[in-house]
Image 1 (cartoon, one colour):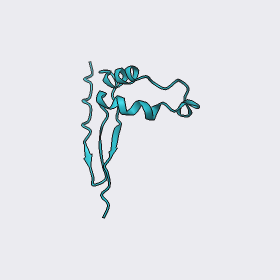
Image 2 (image 1 turned 45 degrees about the vertical axis):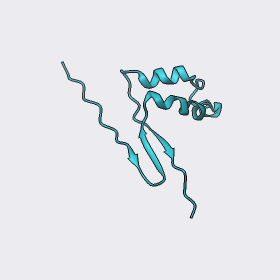
Image 3 (image 1 turned 60 degrees about the vertical axis):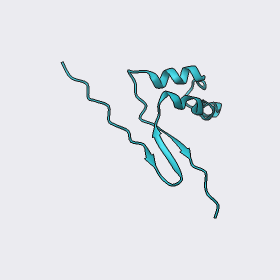
Image 4 (image 1 turned 60 degrees about the horizontal axis):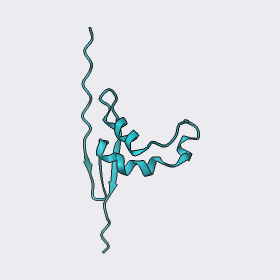
Length: 78
């Protein structure tokens, strides 16, 4: 019997201009508008996910999103 390899840790990355963190269910709300463009599905098929569908997909314990969600920080004007 083989033992499953552990998932690698994904780090939060902070810079002056943005914060990038691994996707978690809490990100679904901000991801739905980004993923709602029908043009994204022209070649891959399917339809844009609803908030509930995306939340469930991100929470699925059998799959893992090796993705990050980026948040741009406001720029200070000099």
